[in-house]
Length: 313
Ligand SMILES: Cc1cc2nc3c(=O)[nH]c(=O)nc-3n(C[C@H](O)[C@H](O)[C@H](O)COP(=O)(O)OP(=O)(O)OC[C@H]3O[C@@H](n4cnc5c(N)ncnc54)[C@H](O)[C@@H]3O)c2cc1C
Image (cartoon, rainbow, N blue to C red; front, side):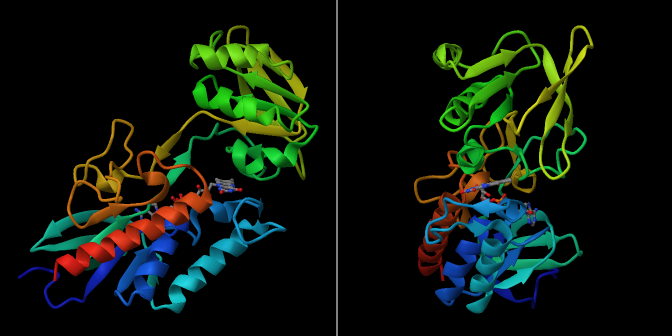
């Protein structure tokens, strides 16, 4: 007999409680589909770790990240979504039902699944990086650039995103120094040309950030030359880190199709390669890395799951 026999079968199981997952839960529970959402850390996902969010519609004065996160959770719960603070370790399909195994050793069953595990920015792993995130350290120019009007910034990285975001930051900052660990960029030639021509952009080659310094906010970085070992102290107001990000898709590997970077591949309806599985937000190939778009995708995935369930009684 299956471990799941006799257990409740949810209509929808959502993995991840960021903007995408919580919005999906709001829509499915409000449509009277029995919904369970699993979150391994805190409600709201990445947005809960930031200070002020100025580009989420409906809040002309901006809204604090933890506040919008907590309100999204309350809104989903209001319509009956069960929110379980456990990590999903395994996802499979058995006897026509999806099965989830959580970190508490519990199994759950459902008729449809929405993958909303988000992505994680790669970090430098240097002292004070974590403590000063949101206080000068950032991983997103679109999110935080506007807080750096007239300031001095370093942008770490040498690929397309480092240059694209570095160029965007020149709209606000007085000076943007690109710090790259090699002596040549990996970015596309057109972006290199634009960056090199921009009078606000300069480069420090062969250097890595050894330390970030500051008490209430970033004041300095210590840059180490990887060839000579020499360390220089540079005064800065902001450290933007653009060294890539990774989808939190490990548990879906081998179950649904992922692209070469590990993002979940979906069709235009956000359906993944296994019928009944959908993906929304930053874990999905092609997603834009913003809260509003993650929420929009959560809505779209929920409506697609609803349509799927209507056709599969
Ligand atoms: C510091 C910072 C500032 C930002 N500022 C802004 C801003 O100003 N404006 C803006 O629009 N965007 C901003 N963003 C980006 C925005 O937060 C993200 O685009 C958005 O949160 C993505 O939502 P998501 O639901 O796709 O993923 P996430 O927010 O990453 O949420 C995914 C959730 O899934 C959970 N999870 C993962 N795996 C499992 C598992 N196996 N089991 C259970 N749970 C799991 C994670 O713990 C996480 O809570 C910022 C991001 C950061 C980091």
